[in-house]
Length: 632
Image (tube, rainbow, N blue to C red; front, side, top):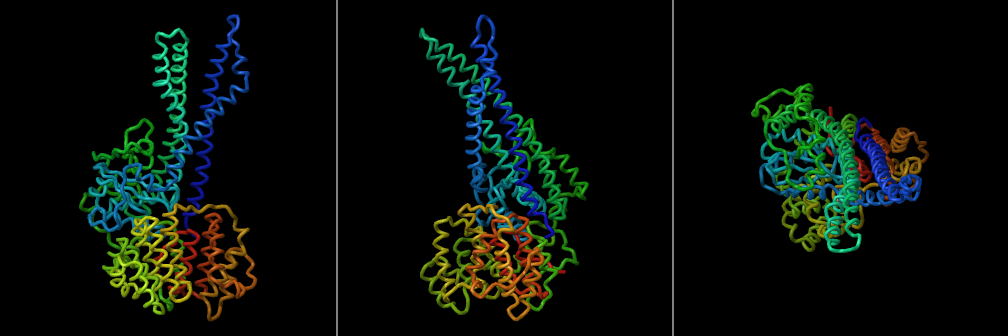
């Protein structure tokens, strides 16, 4: 598969490993510093006949082990605490920075514009649409946060979205999407947690120096005991602990700054690549350079400074390159010093770019289908334009409904509505979800007019409103939907695909479920054969299924053998297989999905139903496959 999303995610994990190694070196340096201080103090304290007994301190293994144990415990507790905060997901980090989620139904023009831009980029790349948070400050800044693409958010300041043109704002949002694509949000969180652990050592030293020691000294006044000397010793010890801890933090900040600066250059370049409009991000940076403030007033902005589009504070170890240097690098890519009117004007779409939605059964779909997979987890101007065109083609009432919780629920009920069970579903929704029923009646016809692939694609747009319901209300809705899908007596492929879309777009995010890589492709080869066989059988029921299955297996280097036995041709079997395959590494999931596409489109044609099935497998594997794609 010709894209870098999966290798970027794996690279982020390896980068995290290097950060852990550097972190361990920093902790070791802190331990050795404390050991030297402690061993020196013990050696001087055991002085005999005016001779310092260096062996009593430096030759005593228990002193080193004691210091190492205490320092390691403090650092570990501080790191784990901060990591638990940051691993809660992008929303938790956004709230730490004072962000408030933008209501998907907001009618503020600036908020509506940034929501549209984020939606277009998410749909174009195949990622779940991230919630957008706004920090109510006139400063101009933005950030991306989250442990992985599924649980990430985009954050913007009020000053940014109300001051930039659409092209400039698109450049900034593309920069933040690059951080998500390249795994920078994960690296940022782990770097912050590592520094927080070392910082805790210095914080305890400062507290000891500033409060505990002086309190003992004050309490010893008038006392004949030696508490005053103990107090002085504690003050001196606390001061030394604070200094050593601060030096450790200083080294950590230097490492953090060096890593962050390179990631910012990469994100700037990626934004130009995604939008093919270097003037968008260049003009946004020029505005910041020419006097617009970037400060974010939240107390957490200091430790999370490297999350931002531009530095949110002045610091000796800048986590962002100088604005002039960033601008000059973009100018090399073609940015011009345009005036604001020119920068904000719409760019013409190339006449050679043909944008369309899912091809019908009679079309030769191979080029378009390949383009969809090549586009997975990345962006380009044509795919963004395709997403924009697709959204604009939707019925206006349906589009507005997807922005509210009631309307989003209504749209999903309408997506599940099939002719064989229409009356039963109508009655069920009226009985169990009266708030959504009127909207359901209003949008049912518009949804029914869409093909199956486009109906399922509506889940992407409905997800933010469904997320805003909260987990309790969502579960009640999901129970009603489950009854609706079983109204005709069972679950078919289309309904299974609807469930997989909701699971990836909403449920994993509400429940904060993370996909763990704990298996290998070689251990799951039988599951891969089952998935490929069922797709081939579903896509080529009239013949050619064995050839499609064999070609897909060859793509993975597998011996094909026989197609799955009749007893295994169930959705339960398919569901169990994809659940196991979701635990294999990113690159293997990408290869598997490419083989699935080959099985579905082996005859050179792809129907909406075939795309729905392949897209459902992508959702189950947590692979970002766009729902709309280009055709030559």
